[in-house]
Every structure is written in C-alpha cells, then in structure tokens.
Length: 499
Image (cartoon, rainbow, N blue to C red; front, side, top):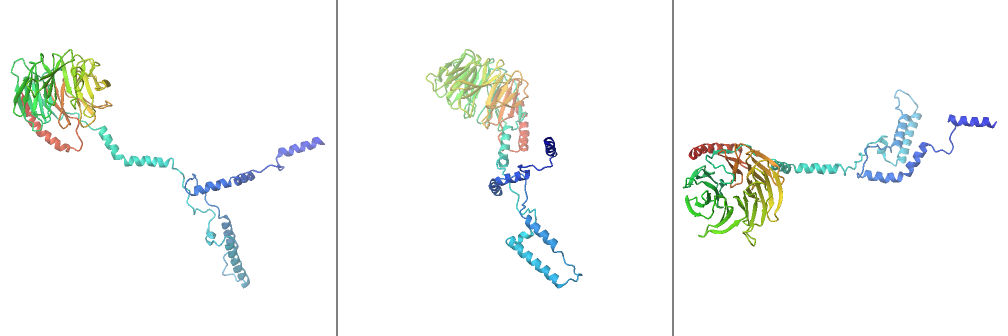
C-alpha cells in the first residue's frame, strides 16, 4: 500500500502538474525586487531628467493607460446614432444623461485635467533624456576646436620647419686663377655688400648691389700671391695676407695702401678683426695681434700650434679668439683671462686639419668647427666649459661653416668627395638641403650682409650664389627673376673683364 502511494506521489512530481508549495513565482520575485529598488530608481530618474545623466534608450511615458482605456470604452459604449432610426424620446434622454454622467465622472477621477483625456497610451510628449557624454565628447570637442583655432599657426610652423630651399644657384660667376689650397682663406663679403676675392696675384672687388667690379691691387713680386683677406666691420678697409709673410692694410674708398705689417716668418693664411685689433695666423705656427692705430703695431704673440695656423675667428663679443691648425688642434684664447697668451682650452678631438671655424650668432660661447678629409666631422663646443656638445659625421671634407642670422641653421661647404654645400638645422643637425653643382672642392664661403645669400668659391674656378636663408615677405618671384636677368647680362661683362 505504501509502495503504491509512494509511486503515485513520485509520478505526480515528475509530471509537474501539481502546484508547488512555498515557491515564489518569477513575476512575484521581479515585482518584489522592483519595489525594493523603487526609491533608488526614483532618485536616479530625477537626476536623469535634469540632463546630467542619460541612457542609450528612450522609454515612452505609459502613465496614461487608464485614460486610454476610458476613452476606448467610451467610444464603444456611445456609437453614433442612426438618423433613420425612430427611437423613443426616452432612450435619447437616457443616452444624453449617461454621457453627462460619464463626463462628470471622468473630470472627478482625473482631477479636471481635460487635456489628459485626449492623451494617447504611448505618449512622447517629453523629450528624450540627454546622455552624459562630458567625459568623452567634450574632450574631443576641445581637441578639435583647438586644432581649428590653431590651424594657421600650425601651418606657419610647418612652413618654417619645411621651408623650400632653392637647389640651384641664383647666379654663377667665373673666378679664373683662384688658388686651389685648403689652408688659405680667399673670400670675404663686407657690410657694404662688396665681395673681395684674389685671382692669381690680383685682388678684385665686386659690388653685389651695382654689379660693378674694381681692381684693387696686384702684388709686386713674381713669386708672390694672396693667401688671405678680411674686411673690417664697417667695410672701409681690407686686410690682405701674402705669401711674402706680410699683411697689407688697404683703404678701399681711396684705393690706397695704408700700411704694411711685418713680423711673420711664413705665409699669412688666416686673418681676423676685433675692432682695431688685427690677428694674423701664419705657417710659422704663430698668431700675431696687431694694433693698427699705433706705429708699433705688434701687441702680443700666441703660440699654441705646432703646424700652420689655417683658421682664425673672433667671437661676436670680442672676448674669445678661436684658432685652428694643421696640427688638428683648436685653441681658445680668452682675452679676459689672467694670461691671454696661454690658451684657455685646447681641443684635440679632430683627426685632421681644422680650418672651418664659426661662432654662433644667437647663442654665446658656442663654436662650430669642421675637420679635413681624414676627419669629416662638424663639432660643437661650449668654449666656457670646454665640453664638446655634439658631433656630426658629414662624410666629406669640411672646408667652411657659416651660421644663419635669420634661422637656427648653418651651412657647411665640403671638398672630397662630394664638393657640395649642406644646410643643417641646429641643434638637431637634420640636413635640410644639399646643394650640388661644384665640380671641385668648395673651399670658401661668405654670407651676405642681409644674411640671405651664401656665396661659395671653388677650385673649379666659379663663384656660386645660393639664396639659402631667404626671409619671408619678399618680392614676388617674377620680379626677382627679372632683376636676375638684368644682372646676368652685367655678370657676363664682368667675367670678360676678369679674364
């Protein structure tokens, strides 16, 4: 008996037909959870309605379901009367009374809001909540607005960073009989826009403004020739070094030799002015300082090289003198030190002759130096601390260096094996341009007074003018080209005069 009862009970449980006792239905559990979270949801919903937060969906307002149900029943209970139906006056009166009663009841139930009686069940009368995207969209909005506002400065900075440098020379002049010697300094550009260059035994002056040429003088001895030259700061006087161990000082305005400075035992291959002090470097390894105002011009002798001095440059403030020699050494002479005739620093890192020297115009105490064919590097020095700041392998003999006065850049001329000019950004030393055209070593360079044009003199007997550092807001290209055409005809006449 018990076994039959147990079997029947088990079958009943397996059939799942009998109701479960003490078990909460799913809809009841959901309702209970919603009631428990009601207070929290109400506070969150109030914040969402204020526009501070919002979800990704819009759930319509379903508060008018009762009103909709009333309207439906009202329409079904009050069909339009048929005018052809002859009903009694009593039924008509009842319909009118029923209608008035329902309207009165509706006004009482819905608190007199007659507008709600016309509401729909799914009412979209409220605007969808605005989502809270302040953390993402707003940040992107700021980013894009900054890009739009700063679009013009960004374009200008890119233009400055990647400005176009002409790859062809602006003009080319013949320079016959220029001496092919790495250790000489045979080109200079004055503040009055006049270029001085020796061709053979004669010094010529070319006015870059008027394109006029002037023959200054010719050395007297047959075996003598020009080894160096340097303009004064005002451009009125020209110092000329010769192979006969002398330094001549010329008044260019009156085409007159002012005086001759003697004392060296070898050719004078380097000259540098510091106001009224003229420094001369010679193959006798010495550097003489001359005071050109007095009769006894020799002021001091600087002895710090063991071979020929081939590079001399005074700093822009006149406080330091840099000298380079064929002994691969750079000496820094400080005029404010206790003993000026002892170098303040000696740099021996170059592995070839150092002829290229250039002081930075925008950063004090920064010196750029270049080594010869066995070295091929450009080095940057802090002449106060004596530290080498940077080194760049140019892969070619460094002949000269010129800093730009407009941009933070410099240009270097090279010999073996590329014979090119390179434009570098400082301090990154990224190569901006490589100017080719010379067929032999570009031994000498000089920069124009306005800082825009660099002229290079090569052993291929040509002078090439490169508009490397052109400033912005210049004349249109067409006007400049017409000017160049007129200058070109004058150049041909000048070349014939030089020859």
